[in-house]
Amino acid sequence: MTLAVPERNSLAEPLLYSVRDARKALGGMSHTVIYDLMRRGRLRSVKEGRSRLIPASAIEEYVALLEREAGEQK
Image (cartoon, rainbow, N blue to C red; front, side, top):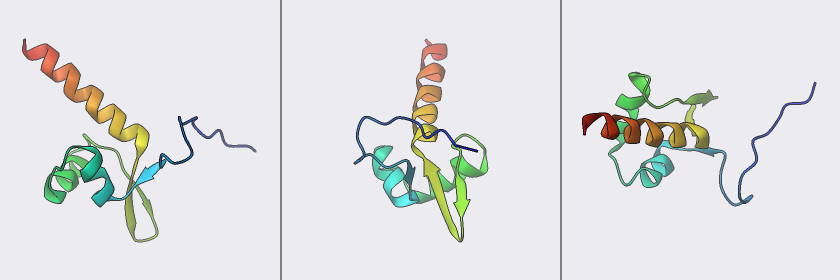
């Protein structure tokens, strides 16, 4: 069985982000906010061992969610 790996623009772009790196990618949100978003299901995450990691696709989905919500408020 072969798993499909999503194509990225560059191998330099990570597929999984630590909470610290996700904070940077999301404009410097606090780690408390990031963990709250994960707890509420607004930001998907995966667990590898003892580490909580956030897929790059989850960050993109969260940003798209924010944009949709902003558009609905107008």
